Length: 291
Image 1: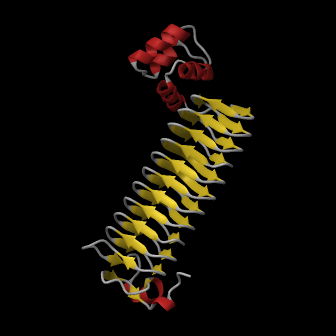
Image 2: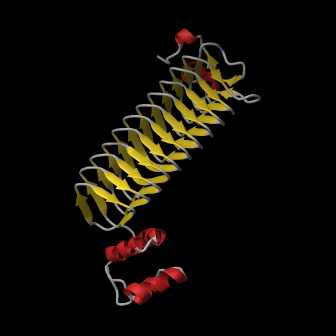
Image 3: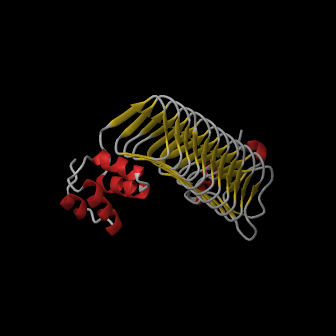
């Protein structure tokens, strides 16, 4: 892909960015060369804008180890060892790392992010594909992904949003809202904002939600299920501990089930009956399925 003056102008760059291009690449240049030059000149945001405009390539950068201040690469990254980036790590394709990924400000990939040693980012993480980590994930901003499968804990300071299924083998701690198509957590699930799961929610270590808690299908926990707002389940609600909604709010089960089928498909079970249970079929704790 060759860059000419007319080609760049057609992308509607900012005036400052266009002047930079005229000073450095008036006679045209290669796509990745321009990205590298922008990053080298401290214009990382401009490099990200250009990648957003032109999209990914089929190029692959394969190295044993990656360490730099910032990297914006139009293709995919294949790193055998660790990745250490001071600010922004962005790839138009996938990022595959045989060790840990550490970035100071942001990590973004147009494909999957695979980290054998875990992922630690001081800012936001965006992944158009799946996040697959064999160790813990720490995110200092928002986390957005297609799917997520983590073999340890996840600690996200901002909101967490996955378009597909999220599976966490340790604790899941979210500082903002949390949304997923389906969610499975082997440890403790703690969300400061609202929690919405389109399908089913399973947590072995209990659920603690600061605002509303909603699941399109069932909710199952081997601990407590607590929310600062309403608790809503399309089908059943099963907890080994207590079920407690926020003050003035209710607990609703069977919202997607006809009332005549509540006994089989909208059962509510906990250590004791929630005082604010407004829909669903209550059964004694020993008849539940939390274990």
